View 1 (cartoon, rainbow, N blue to C red):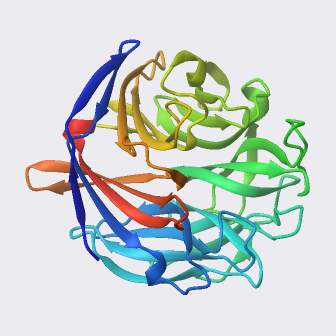
View 2 (cartoon, rainbow, N blue to C red; view 1 turned 180 degrees about the horizontal axis):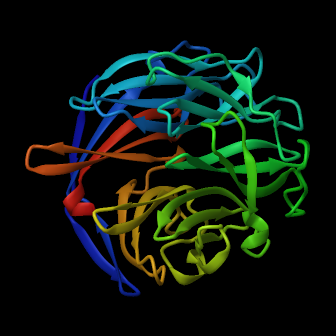
Length: 371
């Protein structure tokens, strides 16, 4: 595959005291395109990654459309972290005529890797319950697709992110009204339920309910969420069905301490941040995700924020500053590598422009510039 290198003029402006930047150095590298996969399943989307050191495993959907495409599979590629080259590609999870819509990686304390999958069917109601595939050999091989099942009376349908510390793994997951234990919390979206925290002490063999975050945060209609450890508690980013984006601080038991509506507080966030990822690196705190900065097309943004006040200090337009007609894309996941005398900030995401089906792409930046 060809590697495209784009150099743009640095743009540094201030909106309400927040610096907005377009990076000077950016490399765009297609990892999987429609030409690389069977013609019947050219729609590539929703990447997630797990960093193994020498390699990076990237899962992604391979289907026919954004959703509702029976027989869509969850595929996986192995990326050489040093060179950025794809070493292998293949299926990770497929289930008859069902839809393997999203996969989220979990690394358990014992070293097992697992992908938790938003399994769906074409006919309504779509969700059929969370599925999982597991590797016990560091990602070399994976077992069969298995049903996660009931957790304290609830069957979950969509997993967002996990944190493992010592012998505990916490997982953010969503309920649905057609699955056991799901209750409507937002009438305009009667299928969707709450975002909960569940916990495992045995490397995912069993799970226990911890807290209903939707209720804890004030019954805001949230869905896609991300979290990171902050001191004795956590910082959580939550996308709202009502086009609001939240940052929330909790204690160690996931009880609310502080919340901020970023959409109301910042003119450059016009709606929610799609598939948000919150993380900390080199002492800074960041929110990554799909953003609409005005009434125009979607863009990929990185926000540096103060973890105490949640004030956004820097906004980096990582992709589509030019305003192309991106019709689907920007669920992005990061990893870092040393490149000579600088640190490379790598993102795996997907992007479809105009009527073209999306590709899985890698974007690379100089971390010192964007951080």
